[in-house]
Length: 213
View 1 (tube, one colour):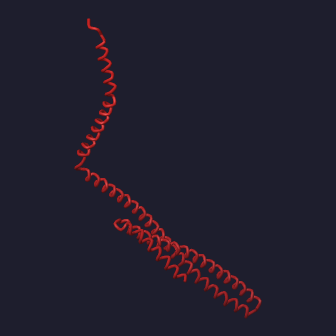
View 2 (view 1 turned 90 degrees about the vertical axis):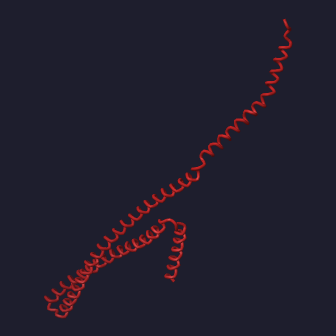
View 3 (view 1 turned 90 degrees about the horizontal axis):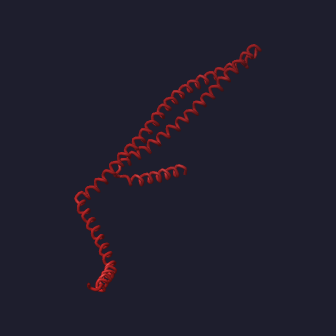
């Protein structure tokens, strides 16, 4: 059941990633994003292995110390049994001492191997982390280049669309402004015509009222 849920979760995650990447099919960064996700997963797996190796090393150390302590204990007991003339107890203690010493030796060798393996894993893990960081920086660089390319493409398209039209557009704007000025001036003249005529009529009446000399 657990495996079923794990497969279902991985399937949903893969579908989600695929849906996200489909939006970027024409974008070369999509492949890098997928590679980054895979690299992050592998880096996480190595991190878990490093932690597991640490636990194994500590476990080997504890078991070695236990075996060494028991070997020392049985050696002291064998010495006491020998002095006391207890041959059976002496033989038992001596046999136990030898077994614990052999176990301690084997555990010591396993501990050394685990340390070497841990150091190798740590080096590999650090290399992977650096590589992953470099890939993230590379993606940022590619995104910057892509943004610049897109911006230049849009600007070039706008400039090409208007390359043969600037003068006609300016001319149309001039005509619009001239028409607007004409309408404003015409409205002003029409609105002030009556007042000007009234003033003119008064002036004419005054001239007619002045007696001739």
